[in-house]
Structure formats: C-alpha cells, structure tokens
Image (tube, rainbow, N blue to C red; front, side):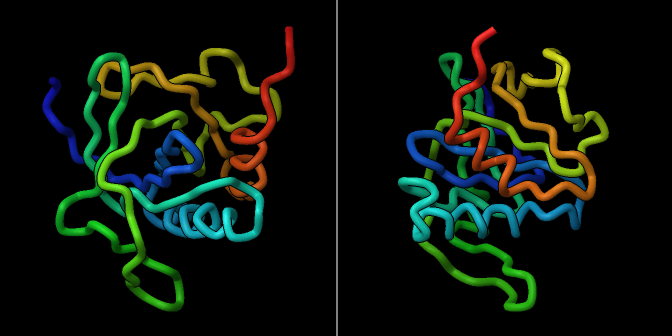
Amino acid sequence: MAADSTIHATAVLAGPKAVLIRGPSGSGKSLLAWNLINAASQGLLTFTRLVGDDRVQVTGQSDRLLVRPAETLSGLIEIHGLGIRRVPFEAVAVVGRVIDLAAADGTRHPVAEAMTVSTAGVTIPRLAVAPGMAALPMVLAALRIPPAAD
C-alpha cells in the first residue's frame, strides 16, 4: 500500500465513486461540494455524501485512487455565509473523477491529454473547469451523460 498524501482538495461521493475537487483557494471547492451533496435531494444524482472538505488524504492502491477526510476535519464542511457545519460523511471512497476548478486549460473542446490526470500513480478522468465557468452543470453532465462515441 502506498503512503497517504494529504492534499488541499475536497471530495464528494457521487454514486459509487467520488469526485476529487481541486483548485486554488477561493475557487469554489466547498461550494461545489455542497451543491453536489444537495443534488441528490433534488433528484439530480442518486446518492451523494461528503468525504472531506479542504484537506483530504489520497492513496494509490491496486490501480485505484482512495480518498479519506483529513482526520481533524472529518464530517466538517465550510458553507459560505454560514461557517463550518457538521454533515454525514464517508470514511473512504474510490475516486472516479478529478475536477480542477479555475483551470487554465479548461476549454470548450478539451484535448485528450487534458482529460486525464495521474494522482498518486493512478490515472483518473479529469474535468478542467475554466475560471469564471459554472462548475455544477459541467460536473452533473460529466457524471450523468456518457461521452459521445468516436
């Protein structure tokens, strides 16, 4: 088993796999996480639950990227205007997609190289969201709509 690495990111279990949300401070990681968590109550996703907010531990194991909350932040999420709140959380999840907010390479038609990322030795599908773009609709589409056939 590879050693854990703590990174500045947020993770939400969305169905069977988690999305790992990365981006600079203030880019909207926690807001996107909160919106994804609420998407299940609106019927937009079947199941969602916080894994971790602000800092998470990632481990590459058996060609899977595992994510866990940082121990001191387990079950806590920052909701802008309300502060830190306690919510149900998953102790560990397999990452199925990386979301990079405020990504310089976020384009309308991404090149193939930008659509995956290697983290902890594991290659994962990636969605690059350009600065100023609304992330939630793009993430929902990525989670719900299969890619077009070539």
